[in-house]
Image (cartoon, rainbow, N blue to C red; front, top):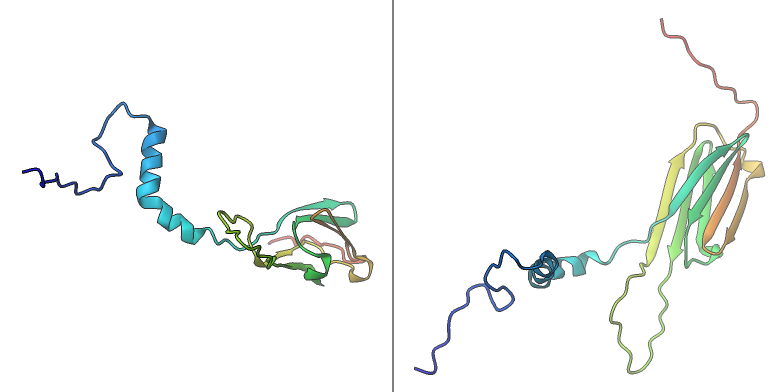
Length: 153
């Protein structure tokens, strides 16, 4: 009876439950057996623009992180108090012979952010700089537009 093997319905990745087994090892086993195929599909994430918007006197200051983008591929549009930033992140098409990609975490594609400010922007005096992957916008407030608080009766 040397040809009989024991049936393992859960496969070889899972062993008997040991309550004293290290939790990191248990999670790693679970990740290897069940979760990893799901995460492979989710790894293709679109690029993101992360930013800070500040108000300073008569200006709005925007710092947007857009690393790895050529400044010609960034477009900023202002319509009243609505600001839109779009950027195209391009993938380099360089393949060397005998080389294969093991891991790719940099994302490629279109990224965009749109936000609304509380005051209209003076489009004639907008300043934009792009340096070391950071877009800096100075958006001056439109003069002569005063806010009025309405009393509710």
